[in-house]
Image (tube, rainbow over all chains, first blue to last red; front, side, top):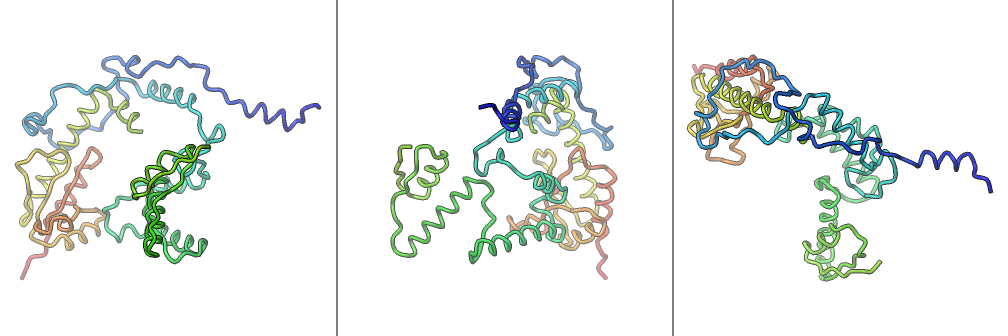
Amino acid sequence: MAATVEQIERKILGKVRPHQTQNEGLVFEKSAPGKRGYKLPPLDVPEVDAKAELGAAYREDKAGLPELSEIEIIRHFTRLSTWNYAIDLGMYPLGSCTMKYNPRVNEFVARIEGLAEAHPYRPESLAQGILEVIDLLQRCLIEITGMDTITLQPAAGAHGEFTGILLVRAWHESRGNARRKIIIPDSAHGTNPATAAICGYQVENLKS
Amino acid sequence: MATIFLTVYGKEGIRELAEHNLAKAHYAASALSAGAGVKLLFGASPRFHEFVLQTEESAAQWTQRLLDEKIVGGLDLSRWYPELKNATLWCATEVTARETIDQAAKVLAAAPVEA
């Protein structure tokens, strides 16, 4: 049976090739003395004698870093980036990791200065915007899930998994039966048995 | 991102950047502690871009005066170290302009005079 136009298109689009340059050298191999990728503005305060000031903490050795011009740095990392397999090129079957698909509008919002540059210790009067976003999200999630309360404390998937297992454990304990085992398939992410073990459970492996 | 940052500054730049940080923080520490009723704590210890100030006036008072000038002042350390009364942690880096430091110093020094 002849392939449909849709099947042919899918086949063409499905082939993702990395950049043809597959022999990119290391930045250290491209380094040459005296090259600069930056220029600091002139110092508007008096210089400080770092050696006298820092004493034993002063480092005589130069940093083990390369010397490149800005365009060389851009080209180097752009070429490397074309070798990556990424969510924008195809399926990436991971859960809550940074590699997962985030709608573009989320990427935009996450870069809004007031959110991206928010300092955890700034005065509360200057943090009202981000607090409002957090509060609204909490209220929405409570309404959607029908739960009584919520925590947005977990900062990552494994952290959320850990919080979840602690909640499950607390619930079982409150009913007088803490349980002992958690069954986890051997195909599961490594954080799964790690979480179970840290929460005091015995891990039973299930062959996939 | 950190890799690219280190590549951009490179062998010479990272030192130059550190020296700018050190100079700005030193200038800020001396400018801010110049006013009456402000003193630099732990001044004899090696410092990079952070320093601690102690004020006679309560931190809450000058924090508000600084906020009126759109400057976020030092972080009150009494939350973690109750024994350090009115002690605040300040920071200046290569992006802090002398103008801002001078303005903050002026506001900090302008404690209301007790009658």
